[in-house]
Picture 1: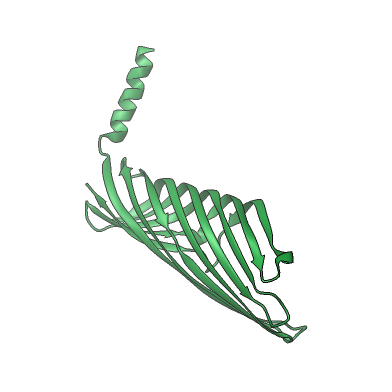
Picture 2: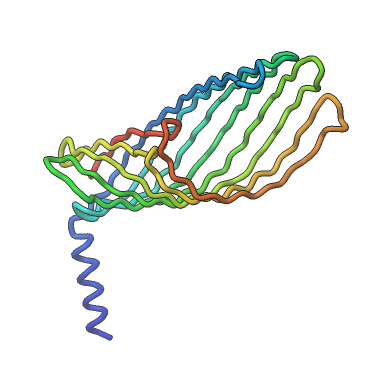
Length: 226
């Protein structure tokens, strides 16, 4: 037993001997627009979304290969959709506020001259609220949706880093190449001008995603090693 304690203590000392505390943060932007025209009908859809995220973080670099940390993220977004149909134009506007906490571990898999390609594993918890307003053509009642909920995600994706100096590191999280499993729980209410169509909802969804598209987020950040 004494020998096992000595081995574990020696391993921990070796792992943390060159450890460095780091502080930093990231900033990300998201924009996409889609236009669709129906081949069967004279319908046209125009959708676009804008958002950003900001995430301060703190962590440890254990050695040249391993680091870990925790990040807090605020990510608001707004999107609009306009649909032109035979009987008029409908408009949808959605406003979302999201707050995340991320626990991550990062391992360098290849590096040269201060440049590193890393693999990051992340456990992400999110809470959000969302409001949508739908303006239908004159023959329909307008709707307002208010939703709130939480998400839990386990994700893996590549990260690029570049050491400017012994203390300063730049990084980019390539979430567009991510693999993740997500569980979403959403509750809310739907209201219209006609009370007969008002309702509440409570739904849970789960899914496995492989992100490989331009709508995924790419974050850029900087770290300072003490």
